[in-house]
Amino acid sequence: MAAGVLLQPGLLLPLLVVLPAGLAAILLLPGAALLRVVPSLAVALQAVLLLALGQAIGHEQRLLVWLGGWDAPLGIGLRADGLALAFMLMTTAVMAAVLLHQWRAYSSGREGRIFWALLLFLWSGLNTVYLSHDLFNLYVALEIAGLGGVALVALSGATTALVAQMRYLLLATMGSLFYLLGVALIYAALGVLDLTLVAEGATAAPVMLAALALITLGLLLKAAIWPLHLWLPPAHSSALPPISAVLSALAVKAPLYLLLRLWFEVFPNVPGPSAWTLLGVLGAVAVLWGSFLALRQERLKLMIAYSTVAQLGYLLFVFPLAQAGGGWGGRAWSGALLHLLSHGIAKAAMFLAAGALVLRLGSDQREAMSGASRLAPVPLFALALAGLSIMALPPSGGFLAKWLLLSAALEARSWWQVAVLLVGGLLAAGYLLRFILPAFRPPAEEAQPERGGSGFQSAAAMSLACLSLLLGLAAQPLIELLSLSYPGAGEISP
Image (cartoon, rainbow, N blue to C red; front, side):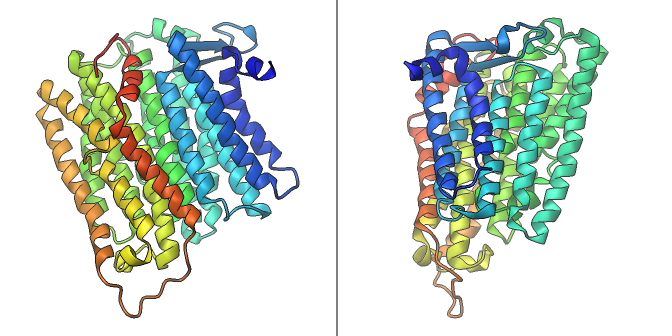
């Protein structure tokens, strides 16, 4: 009976937000056992709550809860639909893999408490971003997630990590300032911050254009979209591998998730056609420039970080394609979101695999990859398997996502997007094969691995790599879920 009460729809959404933060506070209590019990409990409880939420959304398609019984414009609303559910499922999968990866590394001590508490703090912020229905509460959620990510970057203690953390903090704070200024303009013009009420009052007035421009600039900065990406490569490459996985898979996805929500659901009639096209152009440049820089890297983690810059650009293709309407709009929407989910899973797998390779080989330099096929076959295979999704090769989720984008671009006769999609795939194959092919060469005689890797770390990377393939092999239910979230399109055939 108690479990049934807790899983009532009205309690599901608050629990998804509060639970990770509450468990983070428990980690402040003494007891070494908590460092394994609490994170495991967080993953298990989140999975149960998401299963119940999936059933509730299956009946209602959308769930809206007002905290304390106060309705808009004074109340705080939490809303869940298929899109929010998909992103929370991805978050839970990545967190479960990080738990497995760090099962032995942080089982005791002060560092373990800090690591898990910050990770749960970040998790709470991410869930709040996915569920919040108010512009200011979304600002608070972005700050919670951002501060958690910034603090996690410095846990390695290296000087490069501290410098990267400060750059991340300064640029993330700047992004928050732009976002908050935009929210202030909207409140001054409309007197409300609830997303539904803002959507009803939003027009193409100059103040709304200015507000949307500021909000968009802040979110692009937080998401590290070219040319605002300067903080991402040093932060992701200098952080500990599980933190790099969380940052690349999740932390930069939350601002992009919000960008989609705001442009398509709240402000679809505010920007003109040129603004939608501009975002697509920024995405195209990000794909090409990020791939070019990834090709030049000699460190595995730096290559993966610049690959993130490139891969995030594909998401922006949805703006000119879906805004134009037509049958291709739904395919572009589903393709972009499937790409976002597939990239998150695959990139987390790559960073976890890179961490296991470094432990086995002693370095992430490209020349150190020689002999990795013999010395570290499992993490190398996980790296290559996840790379299939980044290269958009079948049967991965990345292949299906980019195929949907490509078909949408072809039907819309957007030839420049077609060209970037094809060239981007070739460039991705190039920078990944630069690191994978040397692994099959015999190791140098003087090369000696510094220390052995953990089976838990290899298993964590392999589990996510396999999941990235499963997203392609069994994607139909997920595509249908994402298609139903496409605003203004009604029922869309994937």
